[in-house]
Length: 202
Image (cartoon, rainbow, N blue to C red; front, side, top):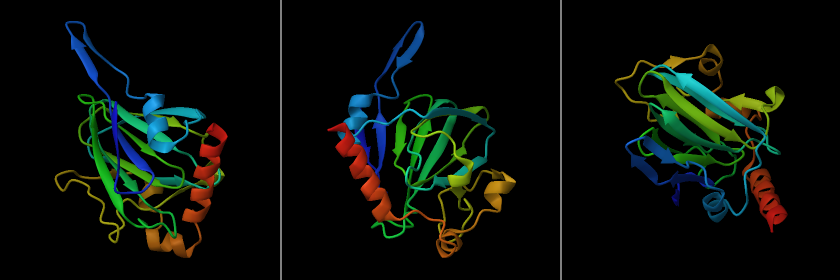
């Protein structure tokens, strides 16, 4: 399995090999050895999530308080989507920057999003499924969001799609508002937490 770091620090793209034959295909979208090589530590499995979305659906931008935050390893088992990672960690060298990866059921690329990063995606076709491996269970009091339509972020949503956004995501603060409200995780806290995860593994 190949992997590469994304523009946003502490996020990675993984590309597995898919095996096709007359029966269909077999692929391993998550391989721990590759994740260890990229991050220096395993992902604890606190919860798995599965969503199915109509074309144009935007989910996110979501993030959680650190510690413990919620790291995510995501891939698309059906359909196709544009996965977007936003650095919402105050003090980060890539604060406010984003990167995106096309995830689909052809190449089965996956993305790892470290604790404290913002995560969102848009479904590019109907019945697009997203599979999430999460390091921690859902914690409503520690979960936050910023608006996926924040003009200052200017996220790369395709212009030919009519966005379908939940009321919760639509009414979420902008990145600047969330920073002013003290909602954002700090890069220093996140870096300390990542180091703790690496130390626990070695």
